[in-house]
Length: 552
Image 1: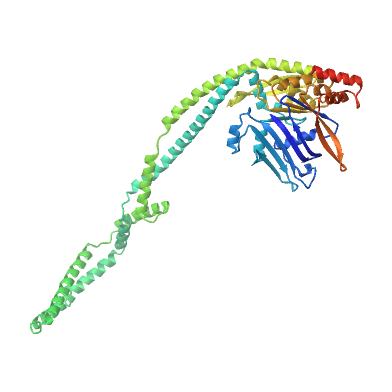
Image 2 (image 1 turned 90 degrees about the vertical axis):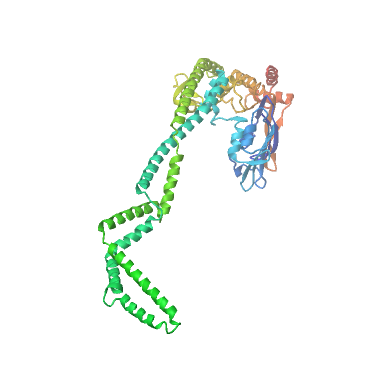
């Protein structure tokens, strides 16, 4: 509940402070004195956007601060999620600087407007004419019927199960996606591995093949040259070896005459032996070297296959290709079949879906069971508030699949006048009609739904007398379980207050400012009597005001 509101330098408010009753707080006052400005300031606390035009004095900052008792709202999780310090007695503050900069604080910690809006929506239900109200929202309408149907425990069980169901469905979808992806990946890996296996690559073979191809393509030159070398070394009449043998024989004759020649003779003899070996090798290679077109084609095709794989996988060697082949084999070994897990999870999902459908059917049955009574009570109470021809109908729509609240949603259809067609509330209800409808609906579910502080602005528009008195009684009853604040022009409603504030204007230094005063009993009598008649009020009006207060 809101405990107090302090406003400084806002609109025509220089400075004021307002304490709120736990029950029904009523605000009345002079026309144009600034009653609705109080709600504007409260709107800043609720996260509405600020405007520099709101500053009373453009040289000073505007500060609006509200103190709340939040001990009953279960907000600790919200505070933890938003990294805020939790206290049962919470302070929200908005500041607007002369430069137009706006800041928001919760317990002196800066927060964004989104956080502030989320927090304040759980604390204050600000009901102004033509605003978007809870009663417009499908979610609120369904909450209302669930409260009347005493569906809380069943709905909690359903929503717990639905959360698990959704998680399992997401898991099932993910496993199915992975399995499908794995199957496609498996096909691709198998295709690549088959290509590698068919290639039968061996380390070092590229260099061997390239060398062999060079040799084969130059076979004729090799054979011709080696044969010529053999001929010149050994076979011709003036072969190199024959001539060197003659030199060797001559050296042999003279080496005995000079010991220095002995090592030279041995070296020369070694050269002869080496040349003979070379000659024989040249002959052997020349004889076995043949031009082989078929082998050239085989080697070339093998190399083309190697080059194609290298280009495909963006590598430059057979060794790198073999590493890729090993990696593909590891991937193949790591890919598992998820079919059995998918089948088991699918069975769980279908089983849980059937259980949820059973719960959803029970939720629906109980909602439908209370609809007629709800519609009758609303229409009867609206008739007491001078809307005797008003009609309301809860229209259910089946969803395509299970949702967080079952398999249906509800829309309230409304008609304010005789013969009017039932339509969605937001499309047909005027401000005054909507105010009374909202008051009636919320009063019916006050004990069933943990509504926040309820603030009504001019809910009495267009009514007076006995109707206003009945509306005051509804507000009074509503305030037994909820904090209620109402800005009103109705003396009948004002008479029901636990705390009564009077808003008035004063002139200060050629400027109009708003002032606020908490009324004592005698002052309340005078204020209500003035609302009943004129200023100053007549004796009969004062007597009537006393009666209203005594009856309240």
